[in-house]
Image (cartoon, rainbow, N blue to C red; front, side):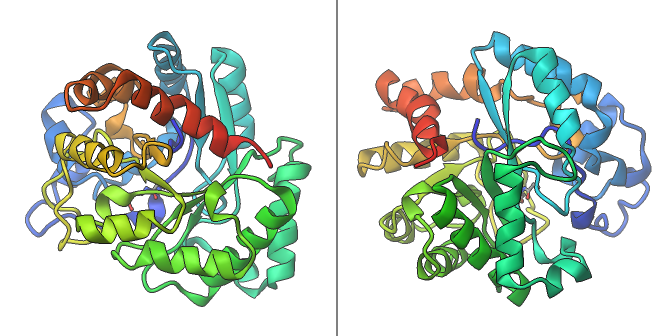
Length: 326
Ligand SMILES: CCC(=O)NCCS(=O)(=O)O
């Protein structure tokens, strides 16, 4: 899984509940309230602290391993409470390989100190997180990202993108991007990375499920050469609170889009994940957990024209190639 979170907080994205639903947001975490939480995951503060569920995470990872999972790329970066010692402990306890992310999340999580840093300083800090360790530890990150960007991309986010490209040029390492919620956002990020020496063939564009919907636009973006990541598997939501214009696809629609990309020749560029970042998606709270793709989505893919060989490319070969330093 190339895009998950195990220990993080998503407080930065708290969204007030719809008018009239204020009391629902205060309800305890009980079965009868889970449907509301699935529809409004960002409107209940308690739901935003995955960092409180480390014990449950141990069980989730053991289940993931039993289902055939070997490795998770943990995309938590500075700004959303990365906790590298907790990740190291989870890896030791479960035997699941956890690859941590270097760099910075979206603008509203940048501190004043981060905003003042030069591109050179930001580059050095990212390189240091990969070569020597992050957050005052000797635990080294294995990818840069998820690097957060909004729409329009802010000046501070542009600086981080330039630094990401410079760091990638030095290290030959994998990069993963969280684009803004606009169909034009992924291409704009790729242009900035390219102009600054980034290697687009070793870069993942995340969250395409909620970003590009038109097939022609998707193929145009795919042609730019990044990995194409569908990473919101398990999210079935009628009103996407961060952009109400978006019709969040269902898992069936996600599989359909993957089959379309495979038919168009992009089987070497597709990646998949769940991007679990709220508590309600854990099996402890009736959610789909980290095994959903392996247990439920893969069988569906096989009935929708995607071969076993192509599934192996998407879940094994493509992540391996992306994660290998040049
Ligand atoms: C930190 C987790 C994250 O950013 N997830 C993306 C959510 S969404 O922008 O795709 O809704």
